[in-house]
Image (cartoon, rainbow, N blue to C red; front, side, top):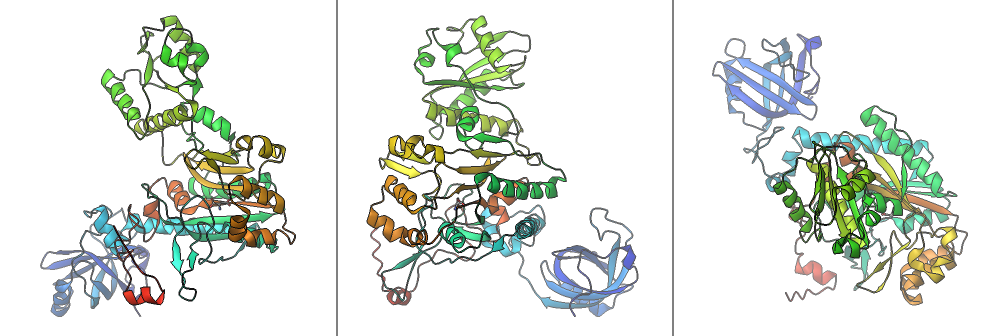
Length: 584
Ligand code: ASP
């Protein structure tokens, strides 16, 4: 037997009991006549003690051979500690060692396995199995497990059935590139790894499953942005005989359960914004509504004062930032430079200060009198001490630019608190978005999303204006879930493929199986998917999703621990009838 208890459970209640424990040696303090060992496992740390008086010489010798991360098994008696450690549950006791077995030795680990480690990111990724021994990493994996468990319970209680869908499939377009897998048995042909189980879950609805979910790996070969993983996990769901409202209710309910578990609080119904409102108020379709700084449009108040930049702009829009009127010229210039960086691309930043002494001044005093400025201040409802930032230009450019500034200020001013949660729905997304580069429409969500019934006619007259029955769930400035009511009518689906520029042959080759299924009584259906990694990170007050994945890839999509991707053996290539011709 390796253990009677774990290292996290013994207390004064167990005094004088004989116990067996196993685990890793976290630290050894050797005072010569006395040795203390911190023994660690997933559950905690227990202090072991050996001394010249009570321990045999032989045992002391074995203990002296121990090093950090050795795996040991010990037997001994629970005794009361003289100097207690109130920080850990086992801090009142220690174990007087009577028998000690070294189960395995360990090399000196490349970084210290403690909450605060000296290991850099890359090194910890390379030895991820050692990193997982550390509380901050281990706790995140446990948190993830708990959330997955809650989700499974909630959905099962609501009548959802977990069904596994295949991983070797044919491309499903969700806007990214596919990872492909060559087929040995079908030379020259490839499977694609699912970007999501979208078409399969729709087929499950045709199959009458009624309510489906799956906690499932998805794969997208995208250019890696910070904190994107090429493989990630979704809570994927689909329901039949439902309208948008039904779906939103079920998943708002699920999110409330998770939020209640974490905060202990009941959340009121989530606010809703249309896509158009979100863009107008926050310049962003996933707004962080934990802090104000809502956009105010200022074209009317600023025009006709000979300030050409504003007069010529399609949109003049600003935000009021509370309590920073004492920002120095230097601080403001630094922010202006920040928004002018190519990543954001703003043309400039105009400011108005409502100073604490009541004086109103601005960077455009030449054009606007104090009276003009006061009207703007009234528009915002600013208070003495506030600072207003204004940007102008084309609406679709300037909104995201001001949104970036708003988020940056939210971060800098500490307004984006990890333990505060502000969920909301964004609804009524446009069905299509026009892609300048390819000169054609793309589905904003995916090609299976249904237009709003009242916008059907627009598909003929002005497709860009048609709105979709699509919705996103947003939490703290992140899209945590998104979905739509699907097209379940063959003709409409075919029309949609036309609009997206698929020829009849292409549509048939790629989606013939779905179109076929629609011939056999497809029920009305819809669903959504949550990004599980991100959801878990945010619920845990964090935004770095990598920390919540046991074995993540780095920013270049590599697993530095197993060193993948990697070349394959020429024999494997030959078997696949593939030839590599790498020119570059
Ligand atoms: N398949 C979609 C996605 O991955 C979600 C959905 O429409 O249900 O975003």
